[in-house]
Length: 317
Image 1: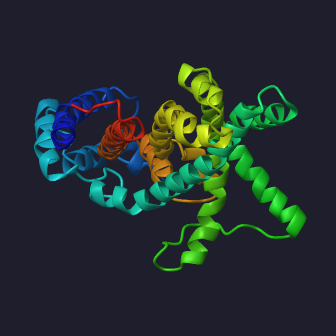
Image 2: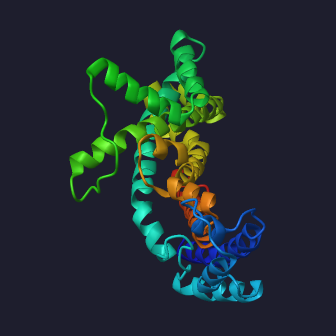
């Protein structure tokens, strides 16, 4: 197990290098000039000399190959350069915004798991009954309703029914835990509903497939209690594809909170990505893409390890 983890971690290095190289060159073909956008942000006229001076100050006048080697040289020390717009280190910009997005993603994942596993199980056990139909309608609705729109409906419902608006803006958990939860629970719930819809459908189909297996029929023939069959055999084996879906959805959530963060006025990774792309901030975009790639790799590793724990027949070598 230890050697497997070490090998997987070692293989992340060439993967991240490949991502860094691809993003570095692809992002250079984006239309627009970050220097021009920056200097003319307030609508003021700027001379060509001022534009060239700013480009030189930011190091954008250097040959592309030189910029590339300087960027790659800083990666081992997590030196991702400075934001072309604010001048702050990219790692600092990301470190400020990342906690809120990670927290919302984790909360959304926990909400989804708490909903999906029981609903998916109930839907499979009571297949083709009214209970199953209700669960399937709820799941399909979760897939059809955009998370940001659900968030707006939540705000409107709270205002209309209780004359109360959810708190807007992020408060760190260590400063005020209750205020933090009051801010993050609503975006987490709106995102977690769609997350739960995907996992519920997967849980239902996976459990139905497992319940058709011979060892389940054998257990029933021996008179084993149905609840015991579900707990000891069916649920554990049915969780394998569900774990995969949950892991991938969690990785997507980190970069997919763009509109939801806008609705609730939360400055997370998603909003930072939008701002960086709008401004053409090369260094910041590169850092964010590397972060999301690293999260995908880490989540996939965790999913593989969970496979071995859920099903001892799977050996990680």
